[in-house]
Image 1 (tube, helix red, strand yellow):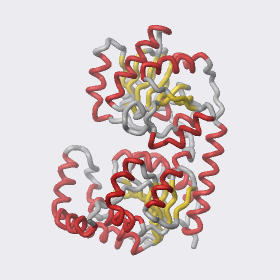
Image 2 (cartoon, one colour):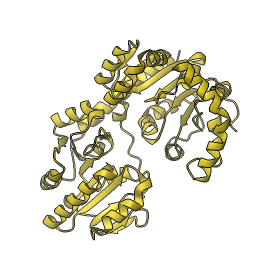
Image 3 (spheres, helix red, strand yellow):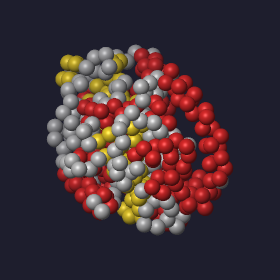
Image 4 (spheres, helix red, strand yellow):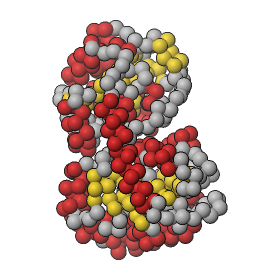
Length: 409
């Protein structure tokens, strides 16, 4: 299978430039920097960099505290590669530094990967929750020590990869070390006979510094405000129904709706307005006094601020067969978490939070309003999130101790 994939990537190589150009026209790529995905760079050579590779916004957020830790040492040169435009925007706002460089990640073509590695010559390559790109992994392992940080293998991924056990084992064996998010991942890695695996904890629990932002200013009643985060379109009716029931009981309820996919905003707006619900898009109105209805968070980078205005958050992807979403961001703001029964991607996290009364399972979507009302009754303006902060510090310490042994060799 590996040989077939290698041949396929060689054959498709000539078409990659055309594909990128088309994506630029559709505003899906950076028109000034898309050639970085072909392995080119306008930045002068900086050798022996510590290379962190992430896929998207979630992963670059997860390594934010780690990058900040190493930025304190000005002798360390850091290269961060990512795939998405939103991850680059986050880098520009929060991680840009004279010793830290961002490049768009090279496409998984042998020619492109070789060009990229010849340019940067990384001392250590650290892939974060990496998707399996064989050429990138195999070629990178030949020029530097390769670490897979915060690896997660879901039940569905395991079911797929076990049919290609030899190939999967061969690819992962190129990593010098693998750190796993949870015990379930370690169990699956053991099945593939992967060595040098350790559980340092999920780095997504490492707390982002609370960056002081003033994108929005809202005067609201916190005892009538809740948020629905990372909501998939198929869950939208449940959120709308819950809002309407809450509003019929309390009057003046405010619901923050944070969609998982912003490319469906028009459909979301249409569905909400068809129910005669007051809808405000946060991109059009960032200062509000005593608002009610649904505030649609239609911009990236605003969600963190939303959690300053509520103590109750429902996590999407859990009323459908998606596996849930990571609750760490609202937790850090002291929010109580509600979630549906489909959280198989984060089972250990939610079980632990439920034991500590920081999260609550909602089995039936029609009961969501009951749980929200219950939180409204006992809400206050502070919340005990000492557990999250301690866990965050412990994982950061373990992770940086582990990485530093390799970085400072």
